[in-house]
Image 1 (cartoon, helix red, strand yellow):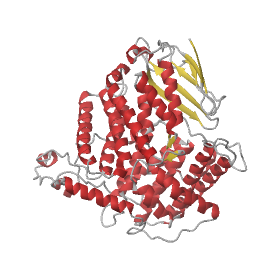
Image 2 (cartoon, rainbow, N blue to C red; image 1 turned 90 degrees about the horizontal axis):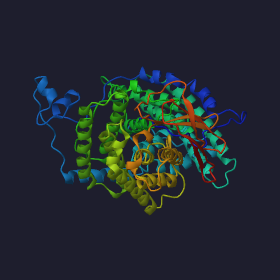
Image 3 (cartoon, helix red, strand yellow; image 1 turned 180 degrees about the vertical axis):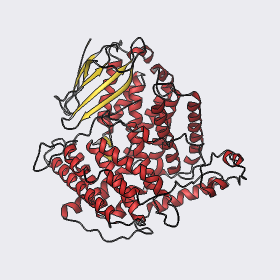
Image 4 (cartoon, rainbow, N blue to C red; image 1 turned 45 degrees about the horizontal axis):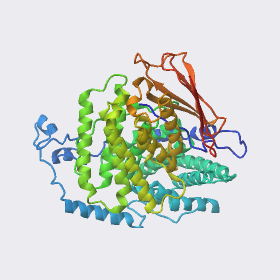
Length: 587
């Protein structure tokens, strides 16, 4: 499955001296001196293996991966070692105390930490001070709406006080947030353009400072690894938001390449990388897998080390459950990419299904002891778990009619989405445009909207996407809703009023959704691939132009090319942000 969405609303940026140059070209000038050299410099200074935190006592001492077979793990038995067993699981009361302690620590306003010198912040001018303040008070808090992460609430703020590269990067993201807010106003003026240009200037300064930082640091400087990885994360977030997906992929893969060598170094020099950096990089990696612009496909050949996760351990914190679930989701995406177009072996589907069931059992035990402020994360994780369960149950790809057996789970995802919105309304956080850097509620709802053919459930998912008003990194709720509406129109084109999912023939169902974004022209190309009656769906040259799709302006259109043998359907779709959409169709 290859799914992608349009670029953000203000994906173009203009230089004050050259208002016609798109942001992708301007950023390219900055990337030339950041590029791969950033990763190479860091890579030469780090080394080591990934820390082992679970498993039997013997494997943990040896720092090797344990298969967690009980009572004695297979790795110990196969190598003739004595398995010393496992640590005694924490009691529910102990879990509750640890969760409460973690919650109290998270509420602490203390920013300092071991090994990190804090100095008073300095700003280049008053405007930068205001933008930085906006990031701290608005952007950081909204970004943490789904995940209680120290990365956004503490670590980046802490580092920005002593490292100019991080400060400039945060200001560039804060200015982007201001730009998106300005673009949402009923009568937008030139303010959005000003913030857009300021964001670009701060980003370029961040790249330059990062380059100097890496050039001046010694090989034993553990702070270098932390600062470099944080800068890498911030650069990924920036490039995702402005639609430079190839550059975002480059930064992301650089960070993931460095990470295994940075978590635990050899010998006495062991740079300490906070868990929050590892977690946010893995979540950004999952976002990249779920959002694959055809011009920047995900490089699955670089993630061969991903393997099926072991059985779920007992979770002490919600972050443990989040990490395990998203590791499983990354595995699912890799599994689909590595097997296609051949059927996925049933044993792999069964093993993954078992992992998901075990995760659900352990998560249910944990939820009873979590504080109320974790409820957004609880609901979101349940949405993702249900989505993953459907993907595995339907074999990831193949006959689309398999999805009709899971209307109950699809409805559950929509219900959870409504509950999440209700939570935020009750907390008074539903006003204004939600702007965050990581994947949240959009992908599960989008999956329902394009894969569930139950007319009511599907329309409920699309309605939630329309009202969400979210920007979640690469994912944008309004764009997702319009793509889903278009897919629904293709599938329901010739259906009678009130027809159910059982009346949508396999040959009429969309199997693949591809979008190619042209940032310079603010256009996107949408292709919906359907199986022919002969069950053929490979792409052939010389296809027929069948569909046009305009999203951000009434004149922006793009074409989709299909093989000649695919079911013919011609549709046009035009939309203005201030008017209802208009759809026409012809055969």
